[in-house]
Image 1 (cartoon, one colour):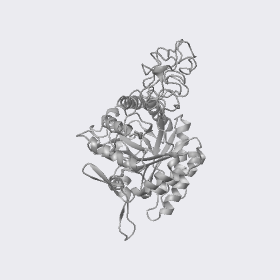
Image 2: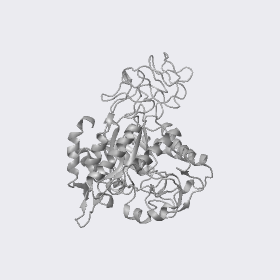
Image 3: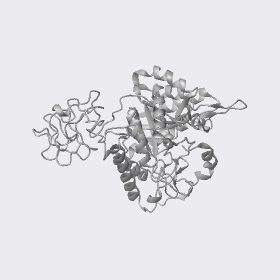
Image 4: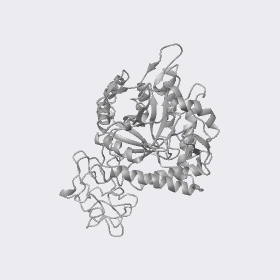
Length: 498
């Protein structure tokens, strides 16, 4: 979501330009965030994991003679050998890992403080989990080859704070400390392809490019928080009103060329994030892609002037499926353990939509993506009271969120769901997600909690408007606002999953 005054003015004029079959009541995107560190290798490094299956990643098979130790296999085809070699291509770095008894120690996980043997790799010499290959004291078994999702909480109380990227490092560190003290355990950061491009978001400083995102993400991981990276696949805001094709990609004339660009960009970004100590726990392949992705050619202000010559519109799911799968593969080529999600803006029905409109759109989108072979772990919805609810009724809004997320959980029992963006009604949306059966509710991400905007301000009739930002910045620190107390209580009530 971008800041809504602009979005709401241009929405109707832009709708005809978007090559899409789905209409929406969009959410918001923006902001900057803070950072923390992951292991530099994302696999058997300082925070990387050596999955429970001990595979060496998608390219790290054991080769004809390799093995991951006396009992652990080093890939889908490798058998256990006596030399512990992971084959010629089975590096642990970003794609490989030792088996359950290989270099990552007896537990198959390097943990936050453990090492994966003297070389930290399954390629050079995997061997058994000898004295040098001990797992960290807090390590847990990974979920797959290469890295794995090391974030231990099963429920995310998160926020998108990308708009604070412009603040000094010390100021961002203060923000993360305060957020953690109130129960936040996850941060969402967006990234643009080239914000300095002719249609870019920040032509002067290039904020929200991958370099800035790595720096902020490193702080998030160092703070011990989970990290969600939101790929917009645009030089500027991507949302239901516009999905601007990056200037550098506008010369491509086939969907295959565009898919290659998506894959290569994603793979490079993930590589940089891991190398910079900012390994994501989850990524979004696109932002609010209700109508599809890579649809428009945009002007210097990021406003569409027409459709790109080749697009990933929902009117052609073969094309859109290729683009989504290319993004997924770009992640998996580097670290198969990173979770994959997509995101649209249909978290609930506005009063004019008619009951079930949001649910039907979401079911159709997810079904089509799955039919194209897009492998998803989670699915995010924008869930603002203003855009996906009823400003005049808290009860009506919560009911629509309950209907949408509950219906999705029933329809797709193997998927996790989260509110990728929301504001306000912080307790309501969290109770909806936390209450989904079988822990299918992964969590929520409050949109720009340190900034006041139309998305978190409620004005009804003649009553005075009520602000619902959570924090205000004063110099290098942040001051709590009334709504933040809601998170103090959620920190207690949700403790079993945090």
